[in-house]
Image 1 (cartoon, rainbow, N blue to C red):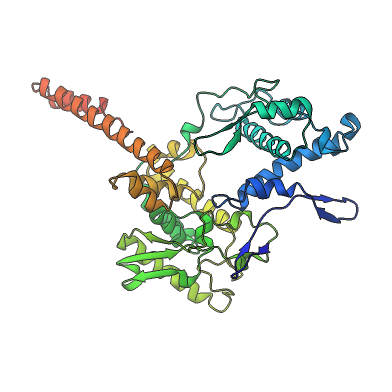
Image 2 (tube, rainbow, N blue to C red; image 1 turned 180 degrees about the horizontal axis):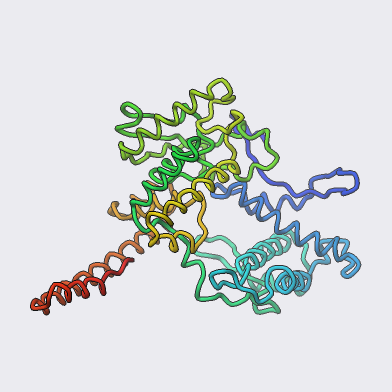
Amino acid sequence: MVEIGDDYELVYVSIVVEDTKTGVFRTHPLTHFILENYTKYEDNYNTQKAAASYICRFCNWVFIENQNTYKLISLEELSVDHSLEYLNYLKTNKYYKGKKDSVGRYRDTETLEKYDLYITAFYSFLNKQKILKGFTANLVDEHTYTNHKGNEVTSSIHIGNGFSLPRRSSVGNEFKLETFPDNKLIVMFLESADAVAEDIAFGIYLQIFGGLRRGEVINASISDLKEIGPNGRDGLRLRIKYRPEYWTRLKDISKCKVKRDTNVFPVQPIQIIPSIAVPLLKSHKKYLDKHQKVNKQDALFIDCYGNPMSGSAYEDRFTKVKEHFLERVKDQLPGYYHTLTFSPWNTHIGRRIYTNLMAAIVKSPSELAILRGDKTLETALIYMSKQAVGKEIQDGLQDMYERKIQENKSFSEGEVDKINDSYQIQI
């Protein structure tokens, strides 16, 4: 954590060399790789941590674990052969053995892609520093080009040069649960939250009807929440701010970060359904009042010890809600159970549900991007395209159904019911 003036602190990840016997460590100059590539305004602590973790694993493998094999003593001796052997080692020994997961995807293909991405970026950095030599330096130069933004980027130096990714199955990320299949499930989910996790039920409401990420919820203070009307009946606003003082007690704060650039402290509007929002907020206020004496930092969401609730604790509470919710669905609405259990989903489902709800209402991608708090239109365009395609298909099916009914006016009531059943397709 570095102070850079005006009471503003920059948190970044550093790479260190550690003496494993004594525990003494010192920062390594490779930290500059993180600072140069992953501390732009759109990057966050988790992005830095991921990049550093992948590179540290590679360096430990090639310089330390396989010292007897490669006998490397300098970064200048590093070549593409070493990274190729590392990736193929991961592919055959650690992340991929021809096995598939429960939905037919080859295991950890995405992880191998990330290793390839980060190591390629790492080699590009070393090349700019004039550290790489010979064939490896030339290979990086050949794969470096300027993108549409005028930035230099490097494509994979491994794929096609002795390394290939496992093929993707046709069953995969398209089954990621992006929203609940019926809006009545949203109400049921919030009821489950109120029943088994009163400490985060209002937080889940903020996610579903405000599009907030987990980190934005747990970093909120009581004063960050602005109510319009009694108990927010006419509106709610939440200021988004990262509060590092909340997390000084934790060793790992990766799940407590805020993704947005919060120097300007943006305010997120929350959509209000009074019959749901007002009772949840009143209940949450009672919970805070009950723990007022132990709420150590005026946090809006606290754990059982009165500390600001960490990301891990929020996830645990969310899992409890999810389990209760799925049991209710299984008993009361079993037709939706398979959809809700087929793909994994976590706290981010709230933001996805919010996006789908808003995409059906707004008139343009820019409006959706504003509601989501996005800097670009990319995600908004994808969601609105899905909404438009879904509506076109549904309208086409409805039109086809109505024409079929007109053509068969003489059908009996039972025969019309058969046609009804044949066109009950949900997108």
